[in-house]
Figure 1: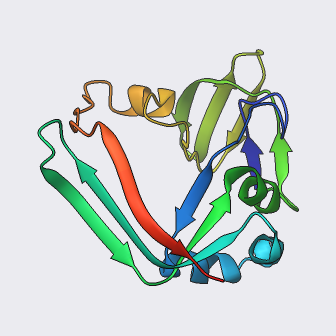
Figure 2: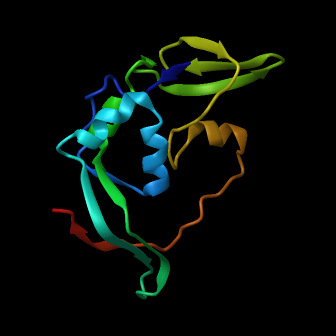
Length: 155
């Protein structure tokens, strides 16, 4: 497996925010040997109670979640651990792909290309992979304007 990443390097962009992972995500991560360090890292925090609520402009609740076991993990720490033992090709900006009889042919901005059996586009809300695959797809504004939560840190 090869990961083609648009960033110039692992520390190219500031990864200064945290990701909250629920118990199912924690169980999955514990099965990946490369991320055992994540849970012992000083930036990883554990909370007894946490509530997440999404509201619209009128402050009407659109989504609400609470959990007894959540971990708050610094994104840079998680990313660094997930990249262990993976072949990452940095500074590869996706341009287009072609579907072949035996896989896919992917073209990058630097003029390089690669053939593979599977293309997974993890390029966000403005995904160029999705634009090519589903050109008429329209993003739907959710109306969410603020995310807030309450939590108590474990001692």
